[in-house]
Length: 382
Image 1 (cartoon, helix red, strand yellow):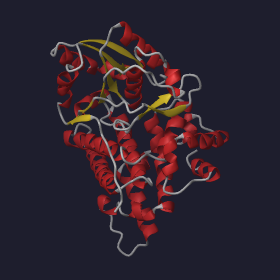
Image 2 (cartoon, rainbow, N blue to C red; image 1 turned 120 degrees about the vertical axis):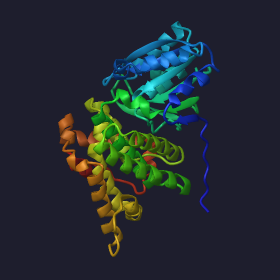
Image 3 (cartoon, rainbow, N blue to C red; image 1 turned 180 degrees about the horizontal axis):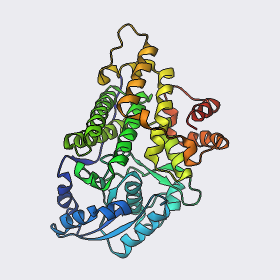
Image 4 (cartoon, rainbow, N blue to C red; image 1 turned 30 degrees about the horizontal axis):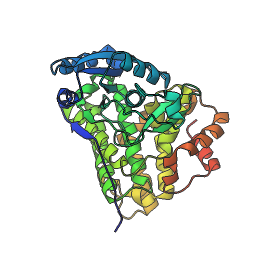
């Protein structure tokens, strides 16, 4: 029997009005909070709702809302400095994956003897971190249950995953109603991004019977929610399914790991200053093609989720049919973007392919990908 070990030291609340629980949880750690959020969330006024909930529990808050599309690791030092100056006793991240990573890093470095550059370089403070809470406005964060965060190094604009030294959020609040800060067109791409992470976790060598079940549930929820949101962008049930897919994918990734698509999307998005979820949408077809080559049996097993009949087909033919169904059902046929539209040129591909190797999780791909093969894969997306 396959040996399974997992530990999820995070309390997760999911569902409509889950956000209302943050006051109860935060009040356990003090009466002053720093809310780290992005400009888009601030413009939507969602942070004011969080402030009001905290205030009703006797917690005053200060706002750091300087995170935008081009924000790099320098924001961590600014947020940590504000937390120290304001004597914050906790940090609350409110936003997308980048914002939540910055909040977590600020919690580690605030009041410590190191700065973000040191953390990126592998140093960790001796001081205890501030408690940190996560509110993913896109209803997902692939790293919420992992001891790592995504960060764009201000010194080089290179993107990498930083180990947090077993420091996790105290609680995560996944509330579909927080997605009001995200345009419906952008939210559609976050669903595709969730699908990519779920498929890559499912294909990973580290995937076990438990995480596999979670990923299959997540893929099913993504397919259903995308279809329903395509018919009605305000469909509450579809939003709930998208949130469920985000949570279940993160649970699966706590035991498994992402793959090439995750690494490539981080590298390309940070270098090109492009939205990472858009880059994921461009990359997903070649990731699926890679899956057909190295684990066709797994891709073929997705057929029932997509209501595809594969009777009489070979494993590879069934897997290819699944890929076409996924392209159709999640709208990838309508996505005409190419990496060249983000400024990526053929001369950049070798550097991108080499940078992938620094992500430790690519060591757990179902089959290794030589650099030349990876360059050929990327050429298809130009």
